[in-house]
Image (cartoon, rainbow, N blue to C red):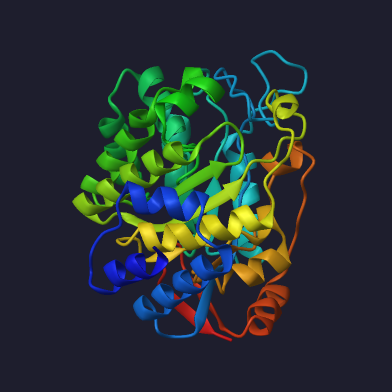
Length: 357
């Protein structure tokens, strides 16, 4: 069956759910990986791997959504709850810029106490004070919260963010875009269209974004295919996604922890990358997550269809709250990519090339 799938791809035909189900559940891992890499090199012939210098701070951990997979959030009034002032957030942007960051991925909880102007000021002041830094701010669910608090639509909020100077949004908060899964692990966050609506409206306005997936909890292969189909269909409309970024669930200190008997390891991750390269035929980039899967797995991922290494993540607190910590330097990224047999290339948020190492 793998040869039939290879033949479909090489003749420009799209894989269907039967193909995807077999690839996710039964196909030999190394053969799927080899095909993923063959397709990657046919679409991106240069043996280069991109990365971005970035940081991922948080402006608040206050959240009312109670997602069962999250160890980071605190309810309003909790003694450990915090919300940073605009100047405190900009201090984090300044620290990242001083270390060479060109992207700051800013996210937080769903905090109903914050007015829309708080977010707009963060964008405007980042653009004004740090013109070399891209404000890659606010996930879809945060934008939905802004809309609810302000009485606007998600599209209206995106218009305001655009006017303030924002041009990209991160893909966090997708988890698995399946009605069944989202009802189980994040019932207050809404079904798949709550996430898809924001990215659809963002792409219509000219924003670029990433699509993410956090798997390894309660999903089945068909739930993953629901996710793949949804983002592939949206990409057909506007081509607004720059990359697909999957990572495995980290159960530490979460409500879901007791339900996860066998956390998924490197083999499942490598299969996910290879299958996404094959199934998501309209996505230009597939990102390897050294941060969530480990640096050695990240290197192997570059031979399973991934062409991007992600970022430096100078600051990251969400996985830290789940007792999962991993750090890296630019020099180490360059070395690891070279060791894997590729040329390291620094990029921007939108995949413009800055320099080759």
